[in-house]
Length: 273
Image (cartoon, rainbow, N blue to C red; front, side):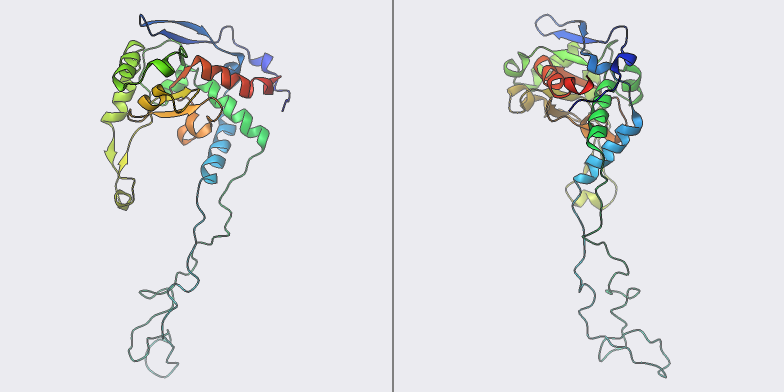
C-alpha cells in the first residue's frame, strides 16, 4: 500500500538516536531511518488508540430474565398501597427496576457497537506518527519518563537478543545508557488500586516505563526484560499505538534492536513513498 504523504516536506536536518556499545558501555549517535522524521499527528494517534483499545473489549450483556423470575403481581387499586408488583403471599415489591432484586431499567446489550472503527490508512499513519514521537526528546520527557540521553530512541546491537538472558545484565545495560531510573520510577510509584478491582485480578497499578522492541519475543533477551516493572515488549511487525502511545499520549521511551529497526522499516518504509 503506497500513498503520497509528502515526507520530504518534514525531513529534519539530522534524525539521530543513540546507539549503545554493549561491550564498553559507550553511547554514540545513530542515524535513524527517515520514518522517524514524520510529523506527530496527535489527532490520528488518539483515533487509532481508541480504535485498537475498543477492539479488545468484550461485548457485555444481561440475562433477558434477570430480575424477572418471581411470582410478583400487582394487587391493583383500592388497597391503600402502590400498584407495583408484589411477591405472592407477601407485601414485598419485586420485578420492577426500582425494587431490590428487580430487573435493570436499561441493561447493557450485547449488540451495542463498542468498537470505534478507523480507516486503514489513518491507522498506518498514526502508527508511523507514534513511532516518530519516540525520537522527540521533549515529548518523551513530557510523558514523565526519566532519562539522561540527548538523542532517542536507544538502539541496541542485534546480538543482545541471544547473548543477554539475565535481568541483572539488562539492568547493567540500562544503567550504562542512563535509562534504569525510569524503571525505578515505575517500581516506586506502583500502588494498590482503589475499589473492587483489587478482587478482580488487577490489584496493582504501575506506571508505564520502557518499551522494548525486539525481533523475536521468544529470545532470551525478550524473556529477561519482560520481568522489569512497567516494561512492555513487542516486535517490529506487531508494535502498535497501544504500545507506542499509552493513554493516547505519544512519546514512549523506547529501546529497539537493530534487527527490529530493520523490521519496522520493512513494515512501513514503502508506505511513505
